[in-house]
Amino acid sequence: MLDPEVRITLRLPQSLRDKLQDASLRGKRSMNGEIVERIDYTFERLEAQLDHVRTTTATRLADELQARRVQLSEAHDEIKRLSAQLDMRDAERATLQAELQDIRERYEERRYQVVDVRALQAEMERNRHILYVLLDADGQPISWPEIMAHLGEIVRNSVGAIDKIEAIVFDAEKASSDERMENWIKLREHYRSLRASGQSKLIDDGD
Image (cartoon, rainbow, N blue to C red; front, side, top):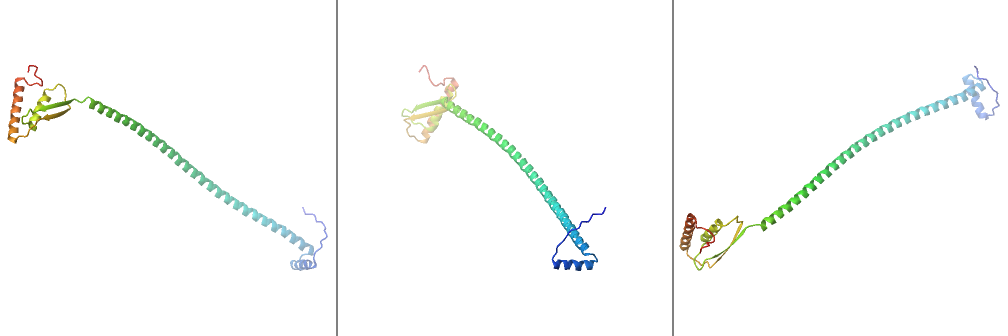
């Protein structure tokens, strides 16, 4: 169906009319045909430009949208990675707290053990069997071998275990080595003979 035509009155500058006339002659068209062609071309060109802008804009927006999607995906992956690290650190923190609690419990247990050991040591110190010995040489020469012989015989005749001996010797005069050795030999033989006869004891009830 043909597009119906309408008549309009158009006023133009003389210079523009001359240009249209020259163009119509070159294009072998009437003045009216030249004007219609040029107006129609303007609209087509504008539509083409608009289509180009639409296409370019749509392409640019699509590229930007894809870039945003990629960035969003990367951000999502980063969030997952950080969440995993956070979960791992929470697990490590829980493990460290459990280890710390275990260390505290062991410390408290050992502290009480130390207290128990100290209490036991104090109790043992209080219950130690200490033998206090006073040796009176009565003016006779005495030597360390003789002292040890006396103490050994006292220990052998004691009732119960002896943990410590504290001995004090009075009137221990100086004597020659030969004399101290002779006295020690006599003392040792004396105790041996008493033990052999069953007469060795700390206190003689009859004397």
